[in-house]
Image (cartoon, rainbow, N blue to C red; front, side):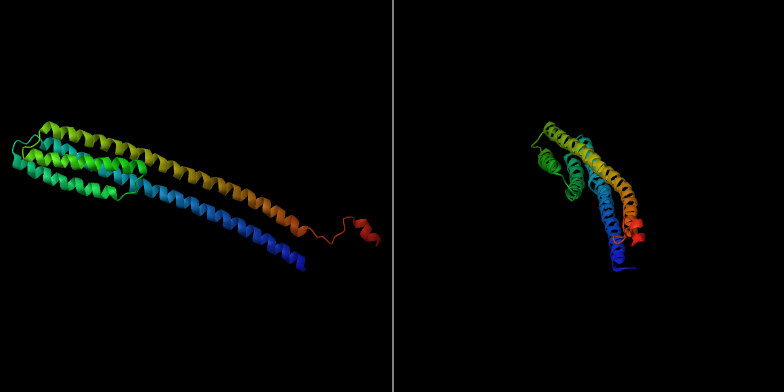
Length: 206
């Protein structure tokens, strides 16, 4: 095998290697995007939605607690519920929040602080149940808004995952086509010999 033939073989193998390497890196990035999308749906959306549900459940229990006539019993129930809400709020703050979500979450925290202050005044007889119920309604509105954001962001993460899968499928098909074309091109390069005369009869006469 001549030096020129060796160079052609090396170049052909190198081109195939680079193509396979490039497509492999693209596939790995697509699979990484899919994995991150699935993790985000669970960690930042499903968990967050569950926390919002837990807060909503405690808010409903508060409504029932407001029917307590005895202030001591009311104080005890509200204090226990406040601990449950604080735990859920702290866990929610640990999830990955979007800009819109951070704004609405800040509003929820302020409304919860207002509610807690009014509840303390209610126990001491400084506030009316109507005021507390109005504050409670404001908390419910923020919870509904945050729940809507979870649904919207979860749908977006799902679309990102589907887009990454579609992109991976497309590149896999392109990879197969490119390998076929390269195989034919390399075969042509290998079979081609620049020293061979284009006119065989002229070679015979000489």
